[in-house]
Every structure is written in C-alpha cells, then in structure tokens.
Length: 219
Image 1 (cartoon, rainbow, N blue to C red):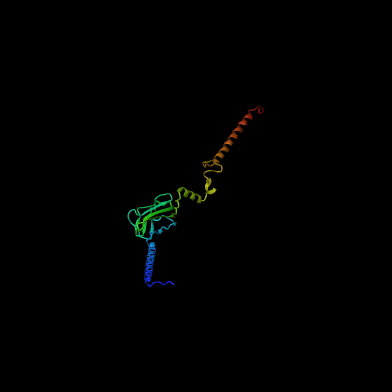
Image 2 (cartoon, one colour):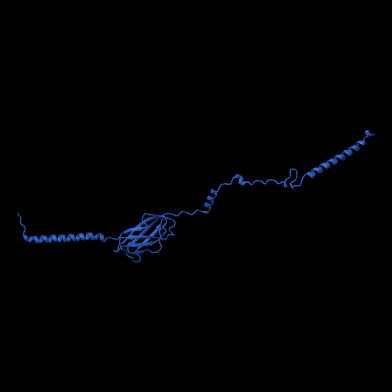
C-alpha cells in the first residue's frame, strides 16, 4: 500500500489554490464580457411598425448607452414610399437619445416611411439599423364640380306644373264676347249694319216698284 509523504501536501494545496484563483479570473472575464458589449437600440418613437394618422414632428431613438456626439458620428435618414427625404436639419444627440426633426409638409402624401440610422456607441464602435412606420394618407378635398353635382342630385326635380306658367285669364276689357281685340263694343256696328241693310232694302223696293209701273202690262 503506497504511503504519501507529508512533504507533498503543501504542494497539492498550492496547486489547488492556483486552480481556484485561475477559475475566479476566468469567471470574472465571462461576467464582465456582457457588460462591455456594444450599445443597442432600446426604443423608438414612433414605434417600429406603427400606423399614424399624421406624420410626427420628430423621430426619437433611445439606446442602451451614451453615444458619441461628435459631428458626423450620428446619421439619420427618413424617406417616404417615393424616396422623398423627410429629414429637417441635423440629428441632435443627448446622452442615450437621438432626436431627428421631420419635415411634415413633405410627408403630407402619406404611406410607408423608412428610417435608416447610424450612431457610434460609447466604446467607439459604430452601430446601425432600420425601422419602418406608416402615415395614413389625408382624405382628398372635394372638387367644386363634384360638390355642385352632389348638390344638384340632392335637390328635387321640378314638377311639370312648376315648369309651365299658368296662362293669365282674359280680362273683360281685353276680349269682348262679340267685340274686337281692343275692347270696343260691337253693338254700334250691329245696329248700323241693320240700318244699312234696311235702307238698301227700301231702295231696292222703290226701284222695283218704279220698274213695274213702267212695264206694258201696267198701261
């Protein structure tokens, strides 16, 4: 049966202590590794995939750590579906937040909006990403012709009696029962005609009587 010498025990203890120290150092490195990881995007306003009634006045990006605020270190591009830039001015960096003003007048058409961003994290490493949101298109204003047509369609059609004016009733002075169109009474003309016919008849009778008196039979 082998017998270990008491002199070897301190050596074993020293080796075990060294292993413990080495294990602690490796564990510390593994624990510290996530802490030294690069910063990342935490939240956005508007949120990615959101649908808005109108274009926002600004875009806000929030990161997990402070960002470098050096000129040119932060870039933000905002474009609509047609590729029109909606960026107004340069982005502003304050600690962990990036704020970019939006040109709301250029975004009046609505549709999908794409955001491309690039920042430099606190460890000097650049990071970038992309997000999208949607702006609802504004309702088109009605044209004057369309509103006039709608008004005409809403108003009731005139009836046949409204389209034809009633003829004025003839007055007594305008047309007489047996008179002319100027309102002069007709009875004087009738009496005159009778008198004229009677006179002509009497004259004819006289002439006829004279003619008979001069005939041979009367002699």
